[in-house]
Length: 351
Ligand code: ATP
Ligand code: MG
Image 1 (cartoon, helix red, strand yellow):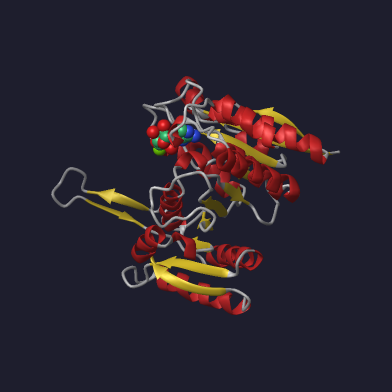
Image 2 (cartoon, rainbow, N blue to C red; image 1 turned 180 degrees about the horizontal axis):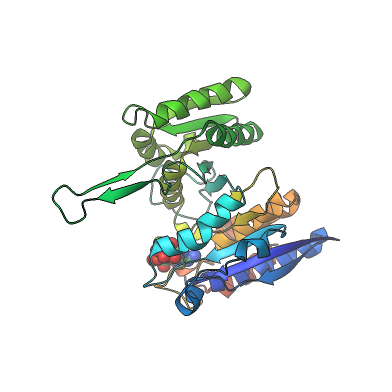
């Protein structure tokens, strides 16, 4: 029996509903593969922020540094600005634990209708590899002359040789294990310092990975192609901002953010990686038991894979595909009437 110690942060809203669903799946698949999990649960959330003035305690990162992985539901609440949950929890964890790869797989499943006519089930199977700790999301910059006609704001984007190289290397290695094709998202025609540097580093790394076919696309054209012909992509690497935009776009192409998983990976494994579905706390449907648990369950599969249980992870993914292809059990975001627990029960039968 292999045992893993997981730091559990259900967070806010539907995070509280989809995390338990994912844990029942982990338990079921774990039992069959001799893998068990122990959880230390943390109430870090916007709820905590409203009560105590901080998303997490001052020594929060020390409390979870030693865990094998972090599993997070969602953080966010009406009345709490997004930057509080981002800068008070998610960004410190990503940066301190060097989770510089944000991995977001997208698939169009058989049985799910994509809003995009050409997104054919079985043909769309791609991964967005987003740079997760530098780039456009920097604190460097400022505002001047507030309230005056001369008011201005400046924000610096930070691209480092080490930061881009390690991310792009991860993308090439991943492409080599998949279908051997990588696309780099750029905009070096308009942004004339950082993105030409990005392009150079991608070309440098490409030379080290001759087994991978690659190209680059400007972000605007890439967005259009993702809608017109999503099946042509395998691995897409992008900066923090481009990767963020692309993964939401691609998730929408696949049928909605309720099914989209994500992993914040520390590939060196000197710190825990963090697993959280792409969706947020969804306050509009929270507390009603109708949240789609697919995103969280697929995210749990990514955690299994990261912890060395690839077979178990694949079984969970096939169970998701099986329910969608062979039953009409769907939560309301996918046009059905099933509750979170109905869907999870059906999925457990497929497991
Ligand atoms: P946050 O502030 O936490 O980011 P948000 O409302 O801005 O929350 P999401 O939570 O991602 O963003 O929700 C966007 C929309 O998608 C909402 O209408 C929400 O109900 C819906 N949604 C998100 N996740 C799910 C899910 N798992 N199941 C069903 N609907 C979902
Ligand atoms: Mg939001």
